[in-house]
Length: 335
Image 1 (cartoon, rainbow, N blue to C red):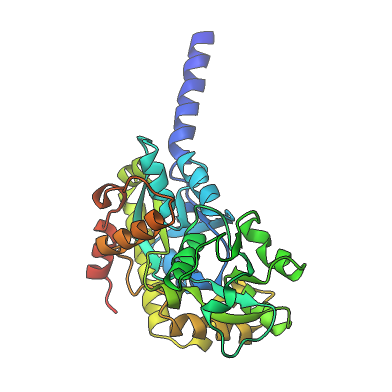
Image 2 (image 1 turned 180 degrees about the vertical axis):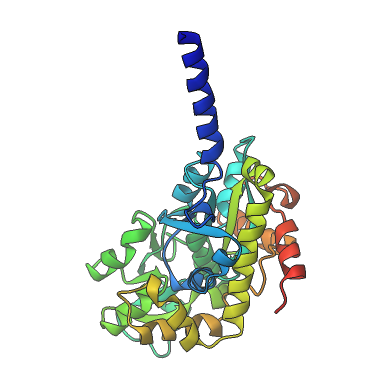
Protein backbone atom coordinates (compact mmCIF):
# COMPACT_ATOMS: atom_id res chain seq x y z
CA UNK A 1 0.00 0.00 0.00
CA UNK A 2 2.85 2.35 0.86
CA UNK A 3 4.40 1.69 -2.54
CA UNK A 4 1.12 2.46 -4.34
CA UNK A 5 0.79 5.63 -2.28
CA UNK A 6 4.30 6.73 -3.29
CA UNK A 7 3.52 6.08 -6.97
CA UNK A 8 0.35 8.19 -6.75
CA UNK A 9 2.22 11.04 -5.04
CA UNK A 10 4.99 10.89 -7.67
CA UNK A 11 2.46 11.01 -10.54
CA UNK A 12 0.68 13.93 -8.87
CA UNK A 13 3.93 15.88 -8.52
CA UNK A 14 4.91 15.23 -12.13
CA UNK A 15 1.54 16.44 -13.35
CA UNK A 16 1.87 19.55 -11.17
CA UNK A 17 5.21 20.44 -12.76
CA UNK A 18 3.88 19.85 -16.27
CA UNK A 19 0.76 21.94 -15.69
CA UNK A 20 2.76 24.72 -14.02
CA UNK A 21 4.43 25.44 -17.36
CA UNK A 22 1.14 25.99 -19.18
CA UNK A 23 -1.33 27.35 -16.64
CA UNK A 24 -4.67 28.52 -17.96
CA UNK A 25 -7.09 31.07 -16.57
CA UNK A 26 -10.76 30.41 -15.91
CA UNK A 27 -11.48 31.83 -19.37
CA UNK A 28 -9.13 29.24 -20.90
CA UNK A 29 -6.37 31.74 -21.71
CA UNK A 30 -2.70 30.84 -21.26
CA UNK A 31 -1.14 32.73 -18.34
CA UNK A 32 2.21 34.38 -19.03
CA UNK A 33 4.40 36.27 -16.57
CA UNK A 34 6.21 39.24 -18.10
CA UNK A 35 8.96 41.04 -16.19
CA UNK A 36 9.37 44.59 -17.53
CA UNK A 37 12.47 46.60 -16.68
CA UNK A 38 10.41 49.61 -15.50
CA UNK A 39 6.99 51.19 -16.00
CA UNK A 40 7.29 53.94 -18.61
CA UNK A 41 5.27 55.60 -21.37
CA UNK A 42 8.29 54.69 -23.49
CA UNK A 43 6.73 51.23 -23.73
CA UNK A 44 3.33 52.49 -24.91
CA UNK A 45 2.89 49.86 -27.68
CA UNK A 46 3.00 47.14 -25.01
CA UNK A 47 0.37 48.83 -22.84
CA UNK A 48 -1.77 49.46 -25.92
CA UNK A 49 -1.59 45.73 -26.71
CA UNK A 50 -2.88 45.08 -23.19
CA UNK A 51 -5.61 47.74 -23.04
CA UNK A 52 -6.92 47.05 -26.55
CA UNK A 53 -7.19 43.32 -25.90
CA UNK A 54 -4.56 42.22 -28.42
CA UNK A 55 -3.10 39.66 -25.99
CA UNK A 56 -6.60 38.36 -25.25
CA UNK A 57 -7.23 38.01 -28.99
CA UNK A 58 -4.19 35.73 -29.05
CA UNK A 59 -5.48 33.68 -26.11
CA UNK A 60 -2.97 35.04 -23.60
CA UNK A 61 -3.41 36.47 -20.12
CA UNK A 62 -0.43 38.62 -19.12
CA UNK A 63 0.72 39.12 -15.54
CA UNK A 64 3.22 41.99 -15.42
CA UNK A 65 5.88 42.50 -12.76
CA UNK A 66 8.41 45.33 -12.74
CA UNK A 67 12.05 44.36 -12.27
CA UNK A 68 13.57 47.85 -11.83
CA UNK A 69 16.75 47.08 -13.77
CA UNK A 70 17.82 44.86 -16.69
CA UNK A 71 20.06 42.76 -14.42
CA UNK A 72 17.12 41.92 -12.15
CA UNK A 73 14.86 41.12 -15.10
CA UNK A 74 17.43 38.75 -16.56
CA UNK A 75 17.98 37.04 -13.18
CA UNK A 76 14.24 36.34 -13.01
CA UNK A 77 14.23 34.97 -16.58
CA UNK A 78 17.24 32.63 -16.34
CA UNK A 79 16.09 31.33 -12.95
CA UNK A 80 12.67 30.47 -14.39
CA UNK A 81 10.75 32.83 -12.08
CA UNK A 82 9.12 34.52 -15.10
CA UNK A 83 8.38 33.45 -18.66
CA UNK A 84 9.42 36.53 -20.65
CA UNK A 85 11.78 39.39 -19.91
CA UNK A 86 11.66 42.91 -21.28
CA UNK A 87 14.73 45.15 -21.08
CA UNK A 88 17.76 46.18 -23.08
CA UNK A 89 19.24 43.30 -25.15
CA UNK A 90 22.63 43.92 -23.55
CA UNK A 91 21.43 41.61 -20.77
CA UNK A 92 21.23 38.76 -23.32
CA UNK A 93 24.75 39.52 -24.54
CA UNK A 94 26.16 39.35 -21.00
CA UNK A 95 24.41 36.04 -20.22
CA UNK A 96 25.50 34.42 -23.49
CA UNK A 97 29.11 35.46 -22.88
CA UNK A 98 28.97 33.89 -19.41
CA UNK A 99 28.66 30.55 -21.19
CA UNK A 100 25.24 29.59 -19.85
CA UNK A 101 23.76 26.65 -21.75
CA UNK A 102 20.17 27.84 -21.38
CA UNK A 103 20.82 31.47 -22.32
CA UNK A 104 18.20 34.09 -23.23
CA UNK A 105 17.21 34.74 -26.84
CA UNK A 106 15.64 37.97 -28.14
CA UNK A 107 12.52 37.35 -30.22
CA UNK A 108 11.02 40.85 -30.57
CA UNK A 109 12.14 44.49 -30.40
CA UNK A 110 9.92 47.31 -29.12
CA UNK A 111 11.96 50.53 -29.06
CA UNK A 112 14.75 51.75 -31.31
CA UNK A 113 16.14 54.75 -29.45
CA UNK A 114 17.16 55.66 -25.93
CA UNK A 115 13.97 56.84 -24.26
CA UNK A 116 15.56 58.97 -21.56
CA UNK A 117 15.82 62.75 -21.40
CA UNK A 118 18.41 65.02 -19.84
CA UNK A 119 16.82 67.04 -17.04
CA UNK A 120 18.43 70.10 -15.47
CA UNK A 121 17.65 72.30 -12.49
CA UNK A 122 17.00 75.42 -14.56
CA UNK A 123 15.53 76.07 -18.02
CA UNK A 124 18.27 76.30 -20.65
CA UNK A 125 16.57 77.48 -23.86
CA UNK A 126 19.93 77.58 -25.68
CA UNK A 127 21.16 74.28 -24.22
CA UNK A 128 24.44 72.93 -25.58
CA UNK A 129 26.00 69.63 -24.53
CA UNK A 130 29.16 71.58 -23.72
CA UNK A 131 27.17 73.00 -20.74
CA UNK A 132 27.71 69.66 -18.98
CA UNK A 133 31.46 70.09 -18.75
CA UNK A 134 32.56 70.15 -15.11
CA UNK A 135 29.07 69.23 -13.87
CA UNK A 136 27.64 66.32 -11.83
CA UNK A 137 25.13 64.05 -13.64
CA UNK A 138 23.10 61.19 -12.17
CA UNK A 139 23.53 58.71 -15.00
CA UNK A 140 22.19 55.27 -14.12
CA UNK A 141 23.56 51.78 -13.50
CA UNK A 142 27.04 50.86 -14.73
CA UNK A 143 26.80 48.33 -17.57
CA UNK A 144 23.28 49.39 -18.53
CA UNK A 145 22.37 50.77 -21.95
CA UNK A 146 21.10 54.14 -20.56
CA UNK A 147 24.53 54.94 -19.12
CA UNK A 148 26.39 53.61 -22.17
CA UNK A 149 24.24 55.65 -24.54
CA UNK A 150 24.80 58.74 -22.41
CA UNK A 151 28.56 58.14 -22.54
CA UNK A 152 28.34 57.70 -26.30
CA UNK A 153 26.65 61.12 -26.61
CA UNK A 154 29.20 62.74 -24.30
CA UNK A 155 32.11 61.36 -26.35
CA UNK A 156 30.40 62.61 -29.50
CA UNK A 157 30.67 66.08 -27.94
CA UNK A 158 34.29 65.66 -26.81
CA UNK A 159 33.70 64.72 -23.17
CA UNK A 160 34.74 61.65 -21.20
CA UNK A 161 32.96 60.41 -18.07
CA UNK A 162 34.76 61.21 -14.81
CA UNK A 163 37.39 63.22 -16.69
CA UNK A 164 35.48 66.19 -18.08
CA UNK A 165 32.45 65.76 -15.81
CA UNK A 166 31.17 63.50 -13.02
CA UNK A 167 28.64 60.83 -14.01
CA UNK A 168 27.25 59.23 -10.86
CA UNK A 169 26.49 55.50 -11.26
CA UNK A 170 25.91 54.77 -7.56
CA UNK A 171 22.18 55.56 -7.48
CA UNK A 172 19.58 52.88 -8.26
CA UNK A 173 17.38 53.47 -11.29
CA UNK A 174 14.14 53.62 -9.29
CA UNK A 175 15.34 56.46 -7.02
CA UNK A 176 17.23 58.65 -9.52
CA UNK A 177 14.44 61.27 -9.70
CA UNK A 178 14.12 61.38 -5.91
CA UNK A 179 17.87 61.79 -5.51
CA UNK A 180 17.85 64.68 -7.98
CA UNK A 181 14.93 66.51 -6.35
CA UNK A 182 16.64 65.85 -3.01
CA UNK A 183 19.60 67.93 -4.13
CA UNK A 184 22.08 65.47 -5.64
CA UNK A 185 23.67 66.40 -8.97
CA UNK A 186 23.28 69.21 -11.49
CA UNK A 187 21.56 67.05 -14.09
CA UNK A 188 19.83 63.66 -14.28
CA UNK A 189 18.70 61.35 -17.09
CA UNK A 190 15.06 60.27 -16.66
CA UNK A 191 12.40 58.33 -18.53
CA UNK A 192 8.83 59.44 -19.04
CA UNK A 193 6.47 60.30 -17.53
CA UNK A 194 8.86 61.13 -14.66
CA UNK A 195 10.78 63.78 -16.63
CA UNK A 196 7.66 65.70 -17.67
CA UNK A 197 6.13 65.38 -14.19
CA UNK A 198 9.23 67.02 -12.68
CA UNK A 199 8.90 69.78 -15.24
CA UNK A 200 5.22 70.29 -14.37
CA UNK A 201 6.18 70.57 -10.70
CA UNK A 202 9.04 72.97 -11.63
CA UNK A 203 11.53 70.65 -9.94
CA UNK A 204 13.43 70.02 -13.16
CA UNK A 205 13.45 70.96 -16.84
CA UNK A 206 13.75 68.69 -19.89
CA UNK A 207 16.70 69.95 -21.93
CA UNK A 208 17.47 67.26 -24.51
CA UNK A 209 16.59 63.79 -25.78
CA UNK A 210 19.41 61.28 -25.32
CA UNK A 211 17.88 59.04 -28.00
CA UNK A 212 17.57 61.78 -30.59
CA UNK A 213 21.22 62.68 -30.07
CA UNK A 214 22.59 59.11 -30.05
CA UNK A 215 20.68 57.80 -33.09
CA UNK A 216 18.93 54.45 -33.50
CA UNK A 217 19.87 51.56 -31.23
CA UNK A 218 17.93 48.42 -30.16
CA UNK A 219 16.96 49.77 -26.77
CA UNK A 220 14.34 47.43 -25.35
CA UNK A 221 13.45 43.91 -26.47
CA UNK A 222 11.55 40.81 -25.39
CA UNK A 223 13.44 37.63 -24.61
CA UNK A 224 13.04 34.22 -23.03
CA UNK A 225 15.21 31.24 -22.16
CA UNK A 226 16.29 29.13 -25.13
CA UNK A 227 14.53 26.10 -23.60
CA UNK A 228 11.30 28.04 -23.06
CA UNK A 229 11.18 29.19 -26.69
CA UNK A 230 11.89 25.65 -27.93
CA UNK A 231 9.11 24.19 -25.75
CA UNK A 232 6.57 26.99 -26.30
CA UNK A 233 6.91 28.38 -29.85
CA UNK A 234 3.16 28.92 -30.13
CA UNK A 235 3.14 31.10 -26.98
CA UNK A 236 6.07 33.18 -28.25
CA UNK A 237 4.28 33.62 -31.58
CA UNK A 238 1.05 34.73 -29.91
CA UNK A 239 2.97 37.17 -27.71
CA UNK A 240 4.84 38.61 -30.72
CA UNK A 241 1.60 38.96 -32.67
CA UNK A 242 0.06 41.02 -29.86
CA UNK A 243 3.11 43.29 -29.61
CA UNK A 244 3.10 43.87 -33.36
CA UNK A 245 -0.59 44.82 -33.22
CA UNK A 246 0.33 47.34 -30.49
CA UNK A 247 3.11 48.76 -32.65
CA UNK A 248 0.77 49.16 -35.63
CA UNK A 249 -1.85 50.85 -33.42
CA UNK A 250 0.61 53.39 -31.99
CA UNK A 251 2.00 54.12 -35.44
CA UNK A 252 -1.46 54.94 -36.81
CA UNK A 253 -3.00 56.83 -33.86
CA UNK A 254 -2.49 60.26 -32.33
CA UNK A 255 -0.68 61.07 -29.07
CA UNK A 256 -4.09 61.92 -27.55
CA UNK A 257 -5.47 58.48 -28.48
CA UNK A 258 -2.33 56.75 -27.19
CA UNK A 259 -2.59 58.64 -23.89
CA UNK A 260 -6.20 57.54 -23.44
CA UNK A 261 -5.33 53.92 -24.29
CA UNK A 262 -2.51 53.66 -21.72
CA UNK A 263 -3.97 55.84 -18.94
CA UNK A 264 -5.00 52.82 -16.84
CA UNK A 265 -1.32 51.91 -16.49
CA UNK A 266 -0.46 55.40 -15.22
CA UNK A 267 -3.49 56.24 -13.03
CA UNK A 268 -1.62 58.91 -11.05
CA UNK A 269 -0.47 60.76 -14.17
CA UNK A 270 -2.60 63.49 -15.72
CA UNK A 271 -3.95 62.62 -19.17
CA UNK A 272 -2.46 65.82 -20.65
CA UNK A 273 1.00 64.81 -19.39
CA UNK A 274 0.65 61.38 -21.00
CA UNK A 275 -0.39 63.04 -24.26
CA UNK A 276 2.64 65.37 -24.15
CA UNK A 277 4.95 62.44 -23.47
CA UNK A 278 3.47 60.31 -26.26
CA UNK A 279 3.90 63.26 -28.62
CA UNK A 280 7.52 63.62 -27.54
CA UNK A 281 8.25 59.93 -28.22
CA UNK A 282 6.54 60.11 -31.61
CA UNK A 283 8.62 63.16 -32.51
CA UNK A 284 11.91 61.37 -31.82
CA UNK A 285 10.67 58.21 -33.60
CA UNK A 286 11.28 56.06 -30.51
CA UNK A 287 9.10 53.05 -31.32
CA UNK A 288 9.90 50.26 -33.75
CA UNK A 289 7.31 49.88 -36.49
CA UNK A 290 7.69 46.08 -36.34
CA UNK A 291 9.22 43.55 -33.88
CA UNK A 292 12.33 42.59 -35.91
CA UNK A 293 15.74 43.14 -34.30
CA UNK A 294 18.07 43.53 -37.28
CA UNK A 295 21.70 42.40 -37.28
CA UNK A 296 23.06 45.87 -38.03
CA UNK A 297 21.13 47.23 -35.04
CA UNK A 298 22.65 44.65 -32.68
CA UNK A 299 26.09 45.43 -34.13
CA UNK A 300 25.54 49.12 -33.37
CA UNK A 301 24.63 48.29 -29.78
CA UNK A 302 27.77 46.18 -29.40
CA UNK A 303 29.82 49.06 -30.84
CA UNK A 304 28.43 51.31 -28.09
CA UNK A 305 29.15 48.65 -25.45
CA UNK A 306 32.73 48.20 -26.67
CA UNK A 307 33.31 51.96 -26.69
CA UNK A 308 32.05 52.12 -23.10
CA UNK A 309 34.50 49.37 -22.09
CA UNK A 310 31.66 47.01 -21.13
CA UNK A 311 32.18 44.37 -23.83
CA UNK A 312 35.29 42.38 -24.66
CA UNK A 313 33.71 39.60 -26.75
CA UNK A 314 30.83 40.09 -29.18
CA UNK A 315 27.85 37.76 -29.04
CA UNK A 316 26.86 36.24 -32.42
CA UNK A 317 23.58 37.59 -33.80
CA UNK A 318 22.31 34.18 -34.92
CA UNK A 319 22.74 32.80 -31.39
CA UNK A 320 21.02 35.44 -29.28
CA UNK A 321 18.38 36.68 -31.75
CA UNK A 322 15.59 34.91 -33.61
CA UNK A 323 13.44 36.79 -36.12
CA UNK A 324 11.20 33.79 -36.92
CA UNK A 325 8.27 34.95 -34.81
CA UNK A 326 8.48 38.62 -35.84
CA UNK A 327 8.66 37.71 -39.54
CA UNK A 328 5.61 35.45 -39.22
CA UNK A 329 3.67 38.17 -37.38
CA UNK A 330 4.44 40.71 -40.12
CA UNK A 331 3.43 38.23 -42.82
CA UNK A 332 0.13 37.22 -41.23
CA UNK A 333 -1.11 40.45 -39.61
CA UNK A 334 -2.37 43.10 -41.99
CA UNK A 335 -1.80 46.77 -41.22
